[in-house]
Length: 325
Image (cartoon, helix red, strand yellow):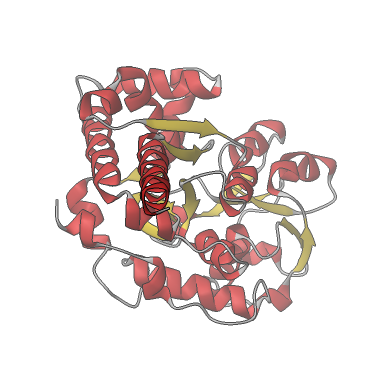
């Protein structure tokens, strides 16, 4: 009996070791979507840099909202999100740890007026199409505040962001809020339309990050460190004048547009160097800090009943790996 029990225990232990080994061997699954700061991952994928760094990664391409849904369902280890959406996803049950700052929006998110709307002030009493409760809504509130107005001065029309170009073209609203590529599509679709306020007017309002599930972040830090090394290799390649065009061509090919057109998308995105990311990871109260920006997003989310209880911002951010590089 003792011999049988010993063999049984040994078999169970071997099974557990095999299971743990198999789990460790599984590639990191990272969701990414159509935003320059995430499309840039394609450079590292195509160049084979993850394999060179010795880390197995599967990048899965999604529509943005679908990527967060997949992460919330436990199908991904990590996902590209805005800092505000990381809070929303966490408040509704799928916590994450933001550990890598890809960029902040620097003009790609736009408040676009129909022909004849030349400034934010011109929106008084007008209809604005915006996806209520999302980051475009926060951009709109800042635009109004910067011009001495409030939400009560306009009429909000709830429109999914990917439908905003068509809604503006139909004349149902006088302005829309959208990000690339929808913002660019709207400007092309509606002759005479104009961006009257953009994320470049409020740098740091919208940070784009790579966020991992707490379990994955805790158990696979060595792999994430290698992913981060590849990321900053990508950033260097994109910012180097000698290799910039090749990087843009790779990114443009991923989303099916010309490099010339995609160059404009990159111009509206401040992809952060390591030193710039470190500066933005210092605790602060304003948009210059990921902490301050996330706190503002949290207050917006609670005020607009996106979720009820304020989130503990510190629980969502881990700066140790970035600051340690």
